[in-house]
Image (tube, rainbow, N blue to C red; front, top):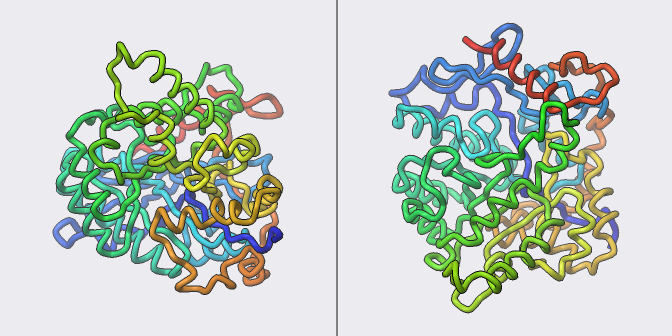
Amino acid sequence: MNKDDMVLVSVDDHAIEPPDAFRRHMPAKFKGREPHVKQINGRDVWVFEEKAYGYMGLNAVVGRPKEEYGMEPLSYDHMRRGTWNVKDRVDDMNANGVLGSICFPTFPGFAGQKFQAHPEKDVSLAAIQAYNDWHLYDWCHAAPGRFIPLSLIPFWDPEAAAAEIRRMAALGVHAITFSDNPSLLGYPSIHDSYWDPIWRACVDNNVVVCCHIGSGAAAAHASDQSPIDAWITTMPISIANSAADWLWAPMWKKFPKLRMALSEGGIGWVPYLLERADFTHRHHHAWTHSEFGGQKPSDIFKKHFITCFIEDAFGLQNLEYMNVDMVTWECDYPHSDCTWPDSPEGVWEQLGHLPPDIIAKITHLNVMREFSYDPFAILGREACTVGALRAKARHVNVEPRPGMGGAAPEGQGQRVVTSGDINRMFAKANAASAL
């Protein structure tokens, strides 16, 4: 086996919604109230119910020279077309040797936070369903076998959420995106039975709950003077607090077939979290009264939690402390952490030493099983390898394109970029985008 023989499926990528994403799918009675793109002060800005939402690219810097990663896209012209055009996305996937992809939302928020917060719930539900229909019909169905569809759900009504899960599952959608900590969004905690209709619908319809970093909790900036590198370093690990909370949550006893994915979280920290969790339970459960029915916390994690990594040599060297059947790979296109167009090279360097059956599990078989995804039935396995996909993409220009434009931190020059620089850049752009 070599690099070109691998089949790569990414469980965490992102779509920048095209300007007309909601137009065709919003119900007739809400026509004219759908989210849309408006140009304000030279920026392409998403507007929903007369409220504008700052940056539209959200770190969609793929294809730029790394020296220009700090230039946040302010318009579609500042982004590689593969970020928002599905035909070009498939070309970019082929050039990167990537067969399949789960694409999280951008404008709505990773878990639809912008829709969850809107006061008119009938309009919000219509927008959620319009997004789901766009994502399924216009994005995923545009390239059969290439995408694993992912649905938004309304948090304010668990029964309506369960109905949407059932509606989408009947159309072949077996994943939802959910907040890693909904209590930070003003909803009950995951320990509350409020969410039970959602967990039940997921189990009944074989649906995975995907919790992306930054969908509730978020990595903290240590200070305005801290190099932004420190914040970027802790970003994936920031989901560890939420992971511990989910580990002790009650849904695993009530719904033993439920599964969740920690999206964009990495795996290197997992062995220690599990060791610490088992120690905590062994050392403290006599007075905390937490019970796992004779199991250890690590047993719950290994059974129910899907993890993923971009490049994580340490984690791959410690698979014995995880469940290799629940470890997956991600690309994170088009964010700054993504390794496009050289993902196969990075993956092979880190896991090429493993037995072929383990490589196959991590790169695609685990994803296919857990997310009810079978691209081989549509495309044939021989057409799904890194080598076969790249052979179809010889026309795709993968050279870095300088000068794509966007907003850079003020006064960046050659000095270290700080958290304060980035926060001020976002604040300025948000103010400039206000209606």
